[in-house]
Length: 352
Image (cartoon, rainbow, N blue to C red):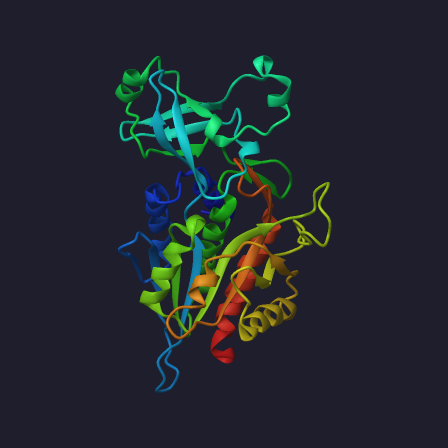
């Protein structure tokens, strides 16, 4: 399977935070041909292990942790009204403004149910109401049920995850759109990296993490168990090359190469890891961008603080419209990130 097809399968799968089963099973299937062992920890992280083929003399081989989170932002059924409408809670950071009229899928134990997010129609709103942003608390999911009893017969239960109903598509020569590129793009990057690695002089742990969107939780426990010598998180970052965004706010551009985090809200990249990424990119003539000051963070923020500390860095794919039902990226950035990560992993023993 090529990189584009891998991204498509991952993007179309459902994995709302805390309910990552579908993506987890897919990750196991996609990883197994390229690693020596695949396992799952108690929290639900997927860990693919590729063992070193050579020894460092009498020294134990270095361990490298790659992390890409499997979960996506979404919703969860909170209550069912007597009229059969579903009220919901947001899972992860979602702007209320993008929710209205979105098609969604309610994932019940019986079967997936299509629905639409509604609110009081603007035609009957008062003038002062139309000027305000409709809060998520004032919205509901309509699945066509006539009452609460019918909704329950359809399989709806409190706590059912709800994903956006958006499918992967190619919209330009190298440009694709799809659901949950944050962080299925990172997952695709990690799988393709393991595919292209070949023999390695270090033990490589490819970890699909859970619950990143609600506090980097999966990476925290996975890193504690592995306690790697070096770690690289694969994620996406805000592509600011759209109208209304200033360069100082978001300088990273789609199609200009993967981005390396210098510093964000949770991590100051370890100097050795950052130097490894930059020098590898320059030696291999791979375009790259540097980013600092983003208010968010990635799994690397928690991995870096594991036990006595882990030198960590981040490779990100510039992506437009993240944390929305549909995002956009340039496949050339993803392909260049694969080339870079493969080359960097082979160089790690020389840096640490």
